[in-house]
Structures are given as C-alpha cells and as structure tokens.
Length: 80
Image (tube, rainbow, N blue to C red):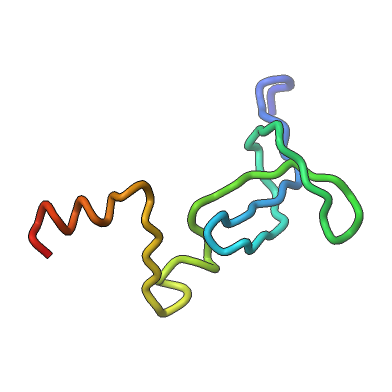
C-alpha cells in the first residue's frame, strides 16, 4: 500500500437529525463538529438526515419529514 495517499480512517459518530439516534462507526469522512460519546471520549460528529432508525425499510412504517415544503409542492404539482 502506498504511503500518504489514503484518507485517515477513524471512529466517528453518526447522528440522525430526524430522530436523534446516534451510533459510533469507522469512517474517513472529515468534519469540524465533535461530540462526547458514552465512553467519555470525544469523536467527530457527522449529521445525517436518514439512518436505520428513521428509514421506512427498517422501521416498517412511513414517516414524512417535510423538508422545506417539498412534500406539499409535490402533492400540489401532481394533484394529490
């Protein structure tokens, strides 16, 4: 493996902004935000809109989060 060309792989916290659910995983994503995790360590924080906690495939129920009136515009456009 070549040295100096790979991004840094580290532990990061992903937080679902729609449900508040968060989990610790490994990633190469960079961010300025940090959060103190349950183990007392500080990790980089990545905010995501959808995770397994809020996606209908995993939850078995449909949740609509109106993102800036997009749902209303869609319904109006297609007469729903």
